[in-house]
Amino acid sequence: MLSPLPPLPFDREVIESILPHRAPFLLIDEVLELEPGVRTVARRAVRAEDWWFPGHFPQRPVMPGVMIVEAMAQAGAVAVLIEEANRGKIAFFAGIDDCRFKRVVEPGDVLTLTCEIEVVRGSIGRGRATAHVGDELAARATLTFAVER
Image: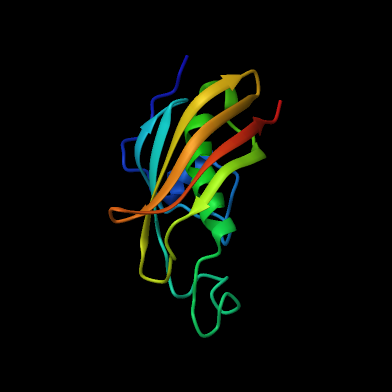
């Protein structure tokens, strides 16, 4: 029997019940929209105290592109790992394609992260992900994942 979904938006406590990530590497603050196995929209407030800013870069703090990609992947992982068959599992990166960065992300920005799952075959799947700041595209990528068996 499928367990009911908690009401949206999900906060970090609910996200931690779905994803294995923990601070400081949990990069989404809330889930705004969710269609299990299909689509997720999540949000991340970019904070001046985020652990990467002192070194990236001291005079010009910029969120590293790899962290933006990881945040998009975590949003997608919610859609995959909330499914009953995948509960308690880990979704690993299997590929990043067509990744482009279109805008600098800095402290004070709020990222809206969307991932639409395109195909799943067995334990392998692919999704198209975007990160926006307001109406501006910050990054996009096609992400391939493998759910542990």
